[in-house]
Image (cartoon, rainbow, N blue to C red):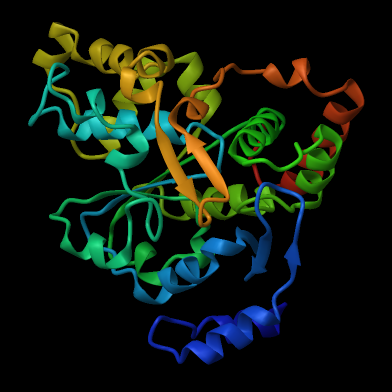
Length: 326
């Protein structure tokens, strides 16, 4: 894999297309999820998005005042986008005219290289930019860690993240056979899932947060669920837009939490209908599918005790000695 990594480092949109295609032809590919996955630099990526993600490392130009919301899939990405957007724009728009009332959070905060985040389009956005990614640090430009932009990372207890992944992929498929829980579980535990292995993804950002705590904030989904007010205050301070004493007294923090709550977002008309096609029409992401349950510990309603114990052993093994616990 080291040889593949050294070869892929130089790939960019300026490289002759034939060379890129030749490289892609050598990469491992797996079926099983709603779309095929390809292993690129030790990370499983959806094959239909591979070329775009390969271009990010060499062609995305981070700015010093960028804010990047990095998440492992199905860990509360939509929620984090809504919170960060509302916190950072509260001086320009209030809760009665927020773009979130008429736009899904996934559209308001573009993904780098995907879902409204074409690299050329991102260059035209005014600073400071609020962006998102599922890519691990190893697939982002090195400048992300040197220019001073801030990164907020969100992950989730792996068993709940897995169950959410399984449900989501089955909703994305158009006409294909459903993915069985057993098949999905085995792939997830092997590390074969979109942007997996999940343990590598978590640990890369965990290590970045330990090395650069002023620039990388590490959050767990469960923290937001258990104490949203504290997390929102910490997030505002980290984004350099702390709540003023006046805002605290007038209840703005509570308003942010309420406005961006799972129930509030799910009940907005824009999040009940519509969606977007992906992979040439092979999959369809419904806005409503982004708001399934959001419950901590829901895995017990789907996985057997044996599955839970196996996942716990895997997590203990992969995270042993790192200081990261679930």
